[in-house]
Image (cartoon, rainbow, N blue to C red; front, side, top):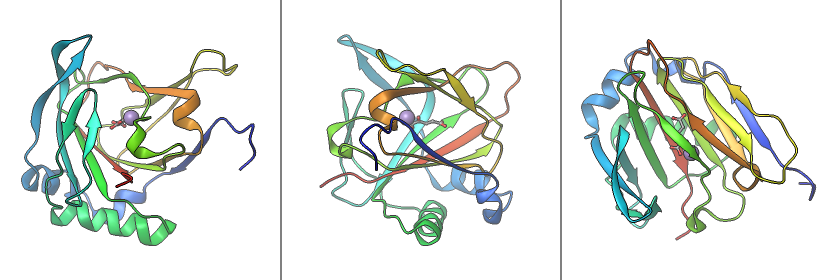
Length: 190
Ligand SMILES: O=C(O)CCC(=O)C(=O)O
Ligand SMILES: [Mn+2]
């Protein structure tokens, strides 16, 4: 990788189609999703979506001021992980599961730059259900335009290299949105 590289994304439309249309339903039935709060300037704020975290037993993740303990892998999530690992020659030990119940659920601007992900984290993000675009914008000092990537059902998006260092991303609210499930596979350095 060149030292000047600021952004590395790979988009694989339809990757999730092979898990067939019941992926969303199956995952909802096997995962217990929770409304969780984050600490923002010392205050507890409920996150506007449902969340679960799965992974290998030692893959603890401190996210927005909260230490997440991994739940054991469930069959569908494990199958999707294995499929991504096999096709792209990558390895993950955890998965953050986000469920957007409707268009009012969202995720604010952030980057996945927690120290336990390392300097240049590879994150594989797969989406099922409603098409909610992910927005990107450069951090201060980076000259680049904001842009968005549509994520229709089955889209697989890799974020890699310096993406987290130089860009923020978000899922804005949307009017008229059916439910959407997103899985982000990560590698926690243990
Ligand atoms: O829902 C998405 O597509 C993005 C999820 C995300 O950014 C995250 O889990 O950190
Ligand atoms: Mn993220």
